[in-house]
Length: 190
Image (cartoon, rainbow, N blue to C red; front, top):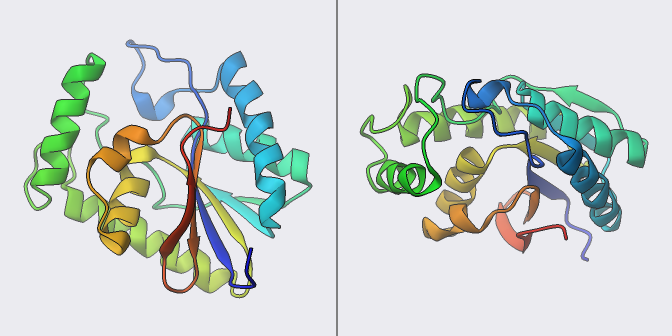
């Protein structure tokens, strides 16, 4: 790897999917914790200096496991949470994918949840900017969520909606700072 600083955008590990609990409140299960250990192993190569996460439990738990394994500081940052869709009931995978595709195709329209794609991107992008400003000259890992990571990466790299569908639980997108160009993406840590 070259000497440029990296921003690692990490989609959280596998949560326990509970249709009776809003997705922002989901926690990791045994499988998600085990995958977080594998994630930590993959991240060694990036010489991370700090790890931050969103406020959601699945993101915090993923980050805590990685931070403990790599002996890194962990901080929770406002604004890194998933697209606001707490008001959306649990839906089958195919139905969710169709709605998210519509969300990406119509970024200024409210098509899913309580936030447009443009609003979610602006919020997440502002949070990322604050993290980069707080930790200049550092390799930063951000544990967040698939939709907001995809919006952020797609707009910096002209990537299609299918990028969202490829990101596994967990996955890593390494971008070079300050250009935000994708250097590598690991769709699945297994």
